[in-house]
Length: 165
Image (cartoon, rainbow, N blue to C red):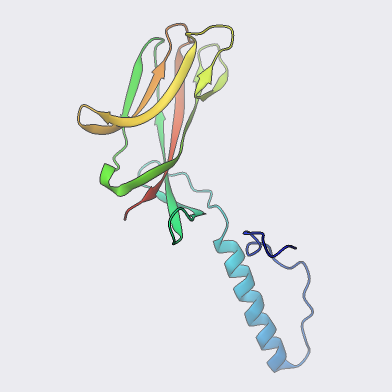
């Protein structure tokens, strides 16, 4: 494998010969443990909590040092066509360096499943978008539904961000 590849660390060796000598075996077992722990700790963590943020396991190198992102999900109910739903994030804006992911999916009254943002190529006003910003002095997720888009029955929004804390 090329030494220019960034992500060599998370991959484990598929084979290892363990010596029969106990002192050499101890060294090899210790190395194996470090290799396994390093690989496990560099994976993306599949926890999507609703009440408080979780560390994602992603490593970002925007600055000179490694930063991890936090993730939180927000479930919501019905949204009528031509309206906006605002969901308070509960995250102090001063805690956020930048959002790395802002996404959502919904179930419509057709029913079908759609990602946000969504643009219907046949109808210019059958759109949905998701934004995060200050509404009425509070940081909120804003989900905006176009006038001719089918009604939304439910959905989830996912925020991931680099944090100052």
